[in-house]
Image (tube, rainbow, N blue to C red):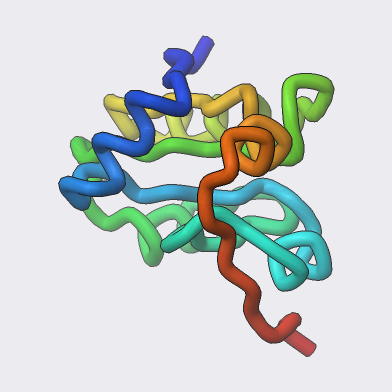
Length: 112
């Protein structure tokens, strides 16, 4: 089971560029808004995709999705762990918690 991370812990780690932040939601959801600096994994995580976005398996990887009721973050985080990543965390509050705290979001073009 991946280790949980709180919003406050995540904010500090993002400020110090200590994590790779991953959104585990469909492309359209990511394009509409995502946490600053997040990369998108819209479906099943493959070893090649993981290696491309997180080549250092010892670096902290934080995965989130829409909120506590969403299981995509846990599924993706579990796959990172199975691929040999040693510090994988889940931000269970996800977008809902981040937005409720009034923290900034980013937008991007949907991949097409």
